[in-house]
Length: 131
Image (tube, rainbow, N blue to C red; front, top):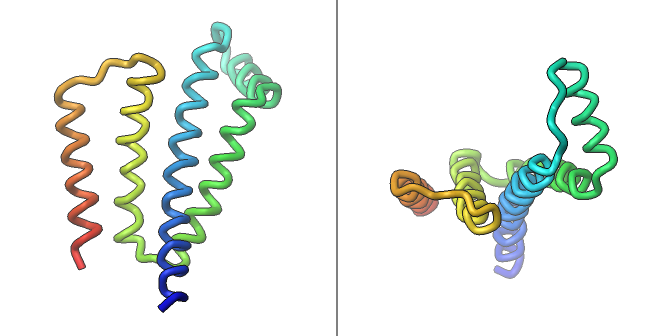
């Protein structure tokens, strides 16, 4: 029985880590890109500015490291869990990003967005308990 509990926590722990790293990536990316200088008009200039910013900004580097960690975690989760169960759980990151971006960046949240979040939450709950 103990092994089953470790399997459950480990496999769903990978999903939770994927959600956490996805949320972290989105919030850090938004925070740092807002602080960037105005983008040049030419595409090569835009690409150069983005790459040089990413390579010299410790926060953006940490965000990309989190994204890579999330990808590895997602692969570990998919190895042992059904995609039909785990993939809907990733939508929890939408909820967290929206709530946190409202709090951190003072972004306005509209009533229809809240209704959408309720539907996403209900959908995840129904899919999770559908066995």
